[in-house]
Image 1 (cartoon, rainbow, N blue to C red):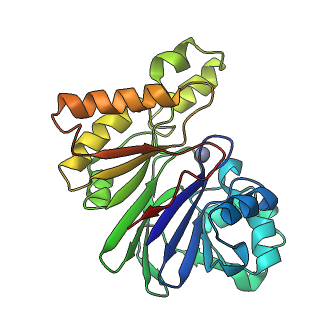
Image 2 (cartoon, rainbow, N blue to C red; image 1 turned 30 degrees about the horizontal axis):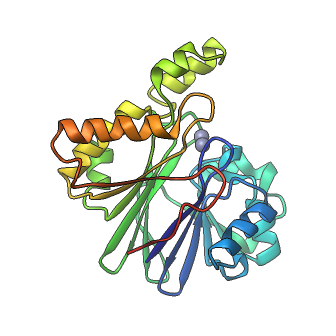
Length: 260
Ligand SMILES: [Zn+2]
Ligand SMILES: [Zn+2]
C-alpha cells in the first residue's frame, strides 16, 4: 500500500492511496488542475483513479471533485447527507459516477475495505476513513472537534494515521478571528487542537499505532514546529517519544510517499 497526503490544511485537503490495482483519493479540495499537478509529482495519474471518497462538503475538501470526476470518469463516494449538501457543486458528475455509502458501515472497492466513520464536525454529516488492504490498515481523521473512546477504538491497530493538529488554543484565542469563529473552532464539533492531537497519539500508541502524520494545520493559528513540539512533549512525558514516528503533512505539496 502507498499513502501520500497531496495537500493538507484549511486551504485544501487531498490524500492519495494506492492498494493493489485500486487508486483512491480521499477528498480533493484544490482545483482539478492543481490536484492533477500534485498527483503527477508523485507519478500518479487522475485518469487511473478508481474512486474519490468524500469526508464532508466543506470546500477545502471538495473543490476539485466535480471536474476531476467528469473529466476522468471517476466515481465519487459520499454519504446521502453529504450528497444533498454538495449537489450544486457536483452538477457535472455523471449519475453513473454517483455512489452513496452508509456511514459507519464497511463497504468494498475491489479488494480494498473502506470504513467511513462518523466524526464530530459542523457539517451535515462528516466522516473519516479507515482503509484496509490485506494486512495493512490506515486512517484519515481530520475535521473532528474532539476524540472519544469510539474514535480511539476505530483507529486502534492502524499502521498509519493522518490525524488533525489544527490549532494552538492560545494562538487561536489571541488571534484575529471573530469571536463566533473562534467559538466554532474550539467547540466539540470544530477542529482538533495540538494538545488533543498529542493526547490522542499517546492513547493510540497503547492501541498499537506507531506511525502518524499531523495534518489540517491552520495557517493563522498554528506553526508546524509548534504542532510537532506539542506532540513530541506529550510522547516524551509518556516515555514513548522514541517509539513513535511522527511526520507532518505539507500544506500545498505532496508530503512524500509512505510505503506500507
Ligand atoms: Zn470541515
Ligand atoms: Zn477541512
